[in-house]
Amino acid sequence: MRGADYVIRRIGFALLTIFIAITINFFLFRVLPGNVVSDLARVPHATPQLRHALTVEFGLDKPKWQQYLIYLRELVRGNMGISFATQQPVSRLLINDLKNTIPMVTIGTLGAIVVGIATGILSAWRRGSASDHVSTNLAIAFYAFPTQFLGLMLLILLGGLLPTSGMENPYAGVFGTQTTIARLQDIGLHLILPALTLLLTLYGEFTLIMRSSMLETLGEDYVLTARAKGLSDRRVVARHVVRNALLPIATLVALSIGWIVGGAILVEYIFSWPGIGQALWQAINQRDYPMLQGGFLVLAVSVVVLNLLADLAYFKLDPRISQ
Amino acid sequence: MSAIATEAGLAGQVSRGRAGLIRQAIVERKAASLGLFIIAVFVVLAIAAPLIAPYSTTARTCAVFAPPSARHWLGCDDGGIDMLSEIISGGRISLVIGFVATLIAMLIGGGVGIVSGYFGRWVDITLMRITDYLLVIPDLAFAMVIADVWGPSLSHVIVVIAILEWATTARIIRAQVMSVKERVYIKRARSIGASHARIIGRHILPQVGPLLMANTVLTIAVAIYLETALAFLGLEDPSTTTWGTILEHAFDRAAVSAGAWWAIVPDGLVITLLIMGCFLLGQAIEDALNPRLRVAHLSARRWALRPLAGRGPDAI
Image (cartoon, rainbow over all chains, first blue to last red; front, side):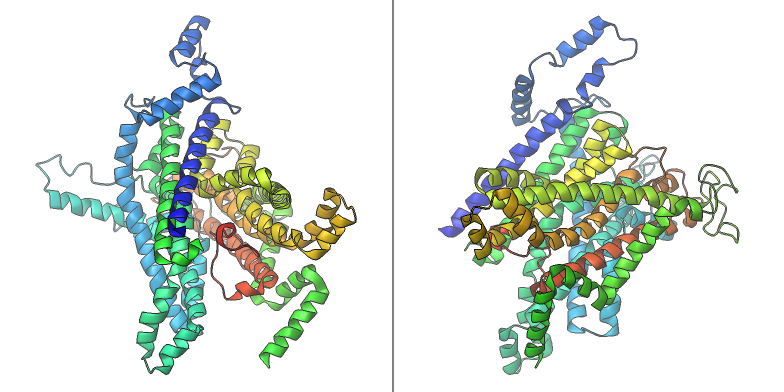
């Protein structure tokens, strides 16, 4: 019963946060100083008539609350407006961008989690040894590296070996047709540098958390019991310590999602990966406000939803949380 | 044996108070002194920048992307401007952005945390929904949108970072205030007729002060991180030189394909070093305030403090 309460409450919070996100997204663009939509009417040499016509066309003559209701209504219908730059529906463009972003970010993040957990376990197991010191200090350093700096370093070091820009070779299909396998291989090669940058910026924190979580679990009574039963070290660590030490990693994943998105924006910018971060940056440069507004909303909503999923996963792993 | 030693240590710490504890933490921990030293060096460099910087940051003094040499230790950028001078004076603005944004964030976060934790009820509920929003929203995306809508300028970048970074602090201070407020001496103060302002000023503020300090150090790291990221994306006043814009210029003007690693590496390392310094110092103060955390791991999020009090829904 309490568990169901917990789940319902979390979902309620998530919905409320999404609503706040939508509202702020509206007011950010229409009410705050530097009112952007009014920029449209500020075309050089525009006659007052043209300005008025534009204002009416975009519904800007209506009161703010009415504009807000229209915005909500259109969002519910999945309409995020038309991109100024490409004259295509923002929602369709964003779905394409998301399709490119998701594999790259997923591979980078999962890689970071796996590497972080593995190095954290080894560090805690061989605590105090030279390898522990090296691994912990490396983790702190990578944790402090600005993402864009890491990306540039990888460009310098590996730029000659791997493709550094875009998602696939634009000329591959020009002479003759390209097989699906060859295309996937090409995309995979392009994916290495962006995903690796994301992995390196993220993994340090997982290492540090996993290490201290392991050390704490190693001091628990049931670990002593397991030892007393005569289990081998390997078995104690693998079966009794690691499983329990993994819990904080779930929390950390949930709390890092906002950071992962930030890192992904920088990575996509550096490697021209045609994803949503790149789209956001382009929208800023082209003054494409519908695209910017839509992209930001999609990012915000995805973070809230992923957070909710992580919360629910944590609840599944550790039902004590609802008590 | 060790238990007795710890108790004696704790008794000593209590008598010295929390400010003394922070001092002790810094003196006793190598990592903390190192962190403090790094920050201090950068502050001194920033203050003395015009005296130290060997060359002008506006006039050409050498060839385009000239490699490091005896005269130009870190080489030159795409405009023939000495890298070392650029990094020294860039640190000035980066540090100002980091420090001022953090100061504003601490004032808002501290204020909201105290008001929210002390008064509770609907004030608390409203303020906490706002922090919920700010805590989950992707920082960089939000900062990009605001910086763009407002236009690129130094003060806008500062305000954007401040707006984004107060929420964690508010949460931690709130949790601490909620636990302090229930203590007997506060109840006694109230029963003898002390006003809210007096209770907050005399009894609550001193209890959350050190916590705010630790959080300040950690927030400086986040602020500088965000500044460099925003600058890298070209959302900062293009006429200023900061650690962020140096990387941006290097990337924009193809320093990578020109093989000019000296336009990228020293600047990136300087940013990393300062962030590490803040991290080491902030963590040490936090550990000193909250010995329970020396082994614990429930770090909230990057560079953030863990709440001293409050578990379950209050623990962020």
